[in-house]
Image: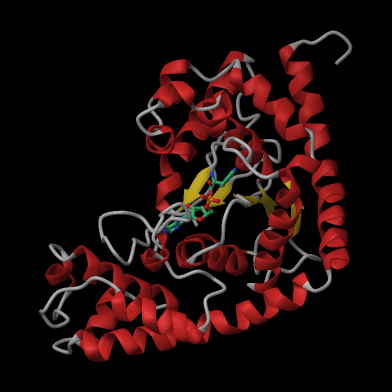
Length: 343
Ligand code: TYM
């Protein structure tokens, strides 16, 4: 991890979040959760279930709280340590929405209009998308900066949002003559897990919203389902290539090799050395076995956590109190800098 920008002299702090909308998949695990857990070994980490982001698209009020608990259970099942790291639900810390409003007045329309994820999510009928969906990345900037987060582990799809967070932080610091007040948060995106693609189309990212369940491996898929999905994953007739150049025009193969590498914690080149010249009849079952071995204990742990909702609620509540204690003084300073009466 590189150094924080020289003008910011506060402590390093990792922040990231996951939406409670739909089942988590292998992309969320390899692009985010696996990294979150590794980072907590030597960093102060704050992780958030971003339910305010989830409601930018319709959610069933009867299910939202349980969806939040499920994501919290996934964090815990993957090894998040709630005594060290902070884990909480975004809506329980009002500071996010307050700072998001101030940032709405700092961010420029042109900056937000450039966000490709809004274009993807709103589809052809952007006029009918919620204002919240458009504003989503501004709230994301507030999430990070209300804790003065310096490092943000995310998948590659979030890169543009992180650039916006940096622009907002920088403009706030300039507008209010407060150099180094907010850090310019640095994205942590490296490694083969940062961009996991659909099993059906190697040019589309693996996503919760893909109508085909065969396009993704869900965190709660059982071993047989995992084998079946990898077996049906799109590939070609050629064997596994000798080197990474040989993956270039083969997006589906590149994706499967990347998944193997991310799961095993090795480089793609190392995977190719092991499997070069072999067919998919050999590679796919090996990949499925590796994925199942990784996911089985997580699924099992998730079930265990979900059987005790009160314990999850207690962890989220405690996390929320610890998060507020960090965010409130930052907001108090922000109010002073803006110049509000009584701040
Ligand atoms: P969300 O809930 O869509 O996804 C959670 C995390 O999973 C990563 N991810 C992937 N990584 C690799 N390959 C994929 N196919 C894949 N699909 C998803 C995402 O990049 C993300 O890291 N806007 C965020 C949530 C958020 C947030 C934040 C993140 C809200 N506030 C502040 C960081 C900091 C989102 O929608 O994630």
